[in-house]
Length: 166
Image (cartoon, rainbow, N blue to C red; front, side):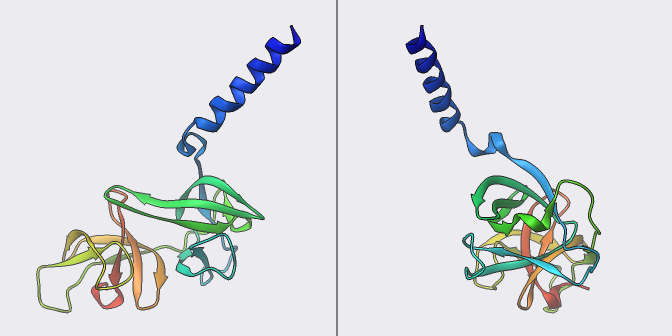
């Protein structure tokens, strides 16, 4: 009888280990406290020394897909046609409400074109995600150098140069 229970418990552990990480996803928001000028770093690895992929405003929605240990969470931001993933410190993620410091802005074209390219990363040399028409409204959720991470109406995340927003 004891060996049957042990086999059952072992089978359950194996089954849980094989379930996709998405089954454990947890919604959260970036919560930098009451100062809306503060932003939370998205890092390439769970370490303060890892490369910063961008800095995100309070109120930005994230999905925690795994506990990375030592106070870090592996997260995904966005959905739709593109998302961004990396690591954030758990102390600055909340499952409740946070001050919403995101900004609603309109797309503009410094090039005189009717649309601009939404890139998958903060650089003009990265892949195009989609085209955005001048006048489209997006939500700025973070920054990286001269680029802004934006969220479109269909939950796609991408990057625009600061001069492509007004």
